[in-house]
Image (cartoon, rainbow, N blue to C red; front, side, top):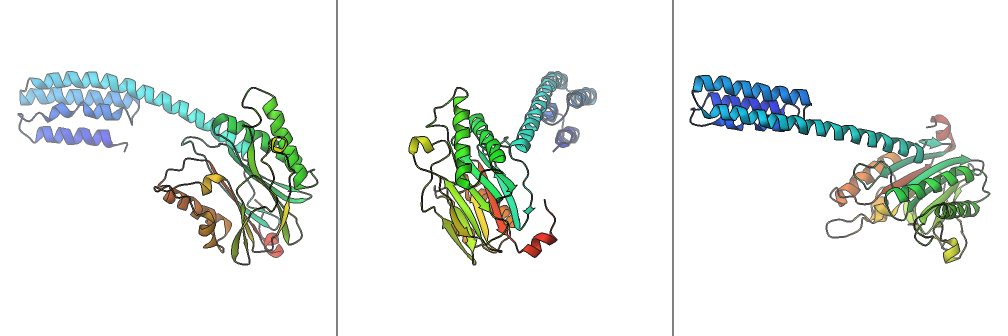
Length: 354
């Protein structure tokens, strides 16, 4: 790609040399510096323009063709415009690089890297922001290794943009603080609910009925054969157990975070079997609401049911490719996925953390 302007210049020059003077191929030379403006620096663009102009002037001495001098003038004018365009492009690229650096920093602060293994649990993550140049959006996840066991959260803030990022930041900050001392998941969910309520009250913005997040909290004790799941109005977790997959639809519903007061009701955690070899798939609705060209949703449960033996990392890599294929590359919502597998104790002791 970077050599394209030079190649174009050489091709036009050869055509001008090896064709009759009546065929004015030299008139195409202004296209070369114009193309260079999108790829090269200002100095390189000016240099190519000077080479093209001098070449046309030299050609006119041998071809005795008056119009070539006008072509040289056109090359000079186009080169100056192209150099200015190259300058503007480089300024925009610098600005975009700075924005990306800020976005990367925000992602590292908000979505901290999750260790690949904590105790007897393997964890892998997938995150795709809806905005093409974004690194983070309204979907979030976090993991905390506490005295109560491994606690996880995955969620989705209503809406998109900076408002959603702000709410996600508030939820994650509260989770990272409360996960270590909350006695159970119900208390932890109430702490998160209180945090979002205070965040909403602290500044201007939508009212409490519009500012909320759905989430799933999970707790995996260090010892035992069960896990506890609390769904706050979130899509159900998929559990792979005994080689089969099932959707963990809660028997008792719990309200989304920041809607407990408005909707009423309490937060209820439920216990599910979780033995070595079992796997939990926690995800946001950006996965199941991915549509194909006919408007059909992505069949996550059926898709995952055919891959019950696939380890977490390959599973999420395959899921990402499947979503891109299903949507023809048109993912229009944030996507977050956690794949969590319990391993035998001896496997956990043999593998390094992180």
